[in-house]
Length: 114
Image 1 (spheres, helix red, strand yellow):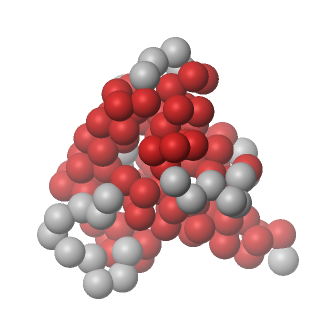
Image 2: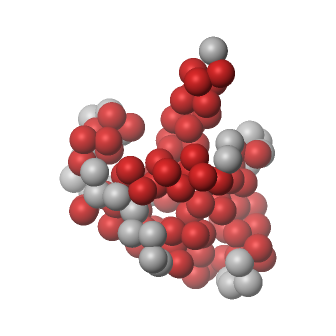
């Protein structure tokens, strides 16, 4: 999956692109897309993103969580309803959001190749 595809999806969702959380989320999604076996965000994902972007894992976690909240509250509600069935008022956790989005991106990639 290309970085541009990930960024395109995030922008379609209404992600505010000028924030650190945006870049960190793109990097996290790239990592998830490359490593199917990543299951623990705190142990693997956040340290990887922090190292790549010269920051610390707790800051990555917080920034991604804030980005998800911004998308959930002010983003493209129709697209969010497509991605998250039975969507609730409160946003999902970071892991659920990232893995759902990664799964959708993978599915769309396979669909385009067919």
